[in-house]
View: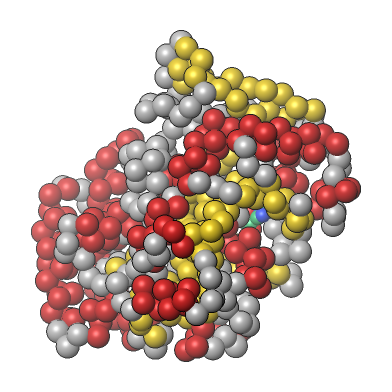
Length: 423
Ligand code: GDP
Ligand code: IMO
Ligand code: MG
């Protein structure tokens, strides 16, 4: 069988966790392919909210196997917390959760380096989640990293110490004070490693390709969003991995010709957390209302998310980079009650109208051009069928589909698993 990919098309937090959970019943295997505990994927069902950072969002279903792929970076401490939070759910982690030996490990000193790097940048900081993501991926590509499989080696503590010493030397370079209790962090780390070792480590590329050969259906779960991709995002205000479809190939060991559907997920408006350009950002009451109604606070850091109108120039770019075959529109309910809804359909870039995402999208270079729509009053959160959609929502959907050339297959009308409408 083949593999489908689900990934975010904006700056993250599109609602990936919710939709992976909704779709898991269709799949045998859910596999996270990149990112780490910078991700916060929220699932709500039976009146309870769960936030996952490293564990794939298929974990609450009976049948599906969940794999953390080689492209992911894992902090044992956060991973242990996630397992502890799930303790009451009676999940058999031995048979349902597997970790790639080739996934990289976030050491406590990676977090120190992240903090020092951000502090040294001052106002130009990226707004990182400070989970050690950048430094861990730097060690990976610099060929110094510590991998999950290393925990199976007799000398893993020596390897750990060697890398830690290197990091401590690197910290001197930054000349900033980082408040960090390394001794305490290491005690938690070593305790968490023991818990981590209770989960099966696998040669995940072999495992996943065998699953494909034996007819299993696979959903690859992305983290972050396409505009945070290290190559195609708003560099340098990005994360340190490939969040786009290609990342699923390298992050799981899946060949491109095994990919079938690419499910691209976006909010009916736009949010961003952390620094960096955001052409359609709103600084007025409308933006504040979106944030309040949409409860736009980071699932990992609790920071307020910046809000603005849907940017179709950026969406079309993300659809193209990923080869998206189906769209999923989230948080449509949040737009109920706005008199007018706007979407950005082109930019004025250095005085000229353009329809693509240019190299520099900082506000001094780019002014968004909007098309306006009549809003709707209907409370969407109670709807069960698309036939009950207000005409202006249908109009909005049709416009987006036509603009980017891909159908919207799911419309989400609330955070709960059940508030999901198949088109
Ligand atoms: P992810 O990182 O892509 O998994 O998204 P997050 O979980 O970080 O953020 C999405 C937020 O929106 C969470 O708080 C979800 O519970 C919530 N959410 C998801 N879908 C909807 C929706 O259709 N309507 C509303 N109002 N909230 C939603
Ligand atoms: P999910 O999977 C939204 C942002 C950070 C920062 C930049 C770099 O929940 O959608 P990093 O910690 O990677 O060094 O941060 O990327 N960021 C996210 N924003 N959702 C996420 O994940 C994010 N993961 C990282 O805010 O701007
Ligand atoms: Mg999130």
